[in-house]
Amino acid sequence: MTVPVHGLPSVVRPGLEVALVPPALRGNRWHTITSVSSDNRAGSLVSLSGVSALGDAEGLVGSYLLARAEDLPADLPLHDRERLIGRVARDEETGRAGVIEEVMTGPANDVWVIRDAGSEVLVPVINEVVSAVPESGEIPIRIPRGLEWQGGVARS
Image 1 (cartoon, one colour):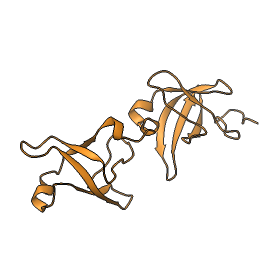
Image 2 (cartoon, one colour):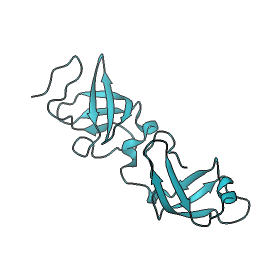
Image 3 (cartoon, helix red, strand yellow):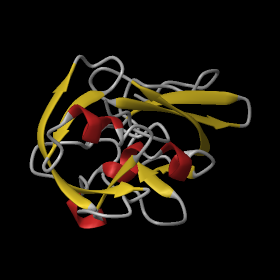
Image 4 (cartoon, one colour):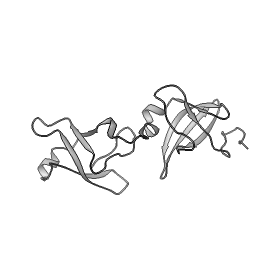
């Protein structure tokens, strides 16, 4: 059973090469995920190449699976809570800015809770609103018309 860490979404998929950490003293440290099944509740059950016996699988309990950065989804920075919380997001149209205080995971997309002095807005993390997250500095967003800052005025 695999469970994502740090609030990130699961990125396991068949064909993904992963390294086991801590590595085994002997044997192959790299494996390919051969199958993935999930009930969307607690994590994903994965099968790894070279792991066919129950004893081999039991020896992996508590291990981490690491993938190469280039094999991760391009939109992963949009979901990285540790990288987002505390960053400033600024609406490109109005110039209004606030700090990302929370990242809520929803069934269709994440939602950022952005707060400024005494008010907040809930922003859906979709391409039309957030197209990219730069490594540093402010994150440009486009707050959709009709959303309003709590205690603020709705955009028309």
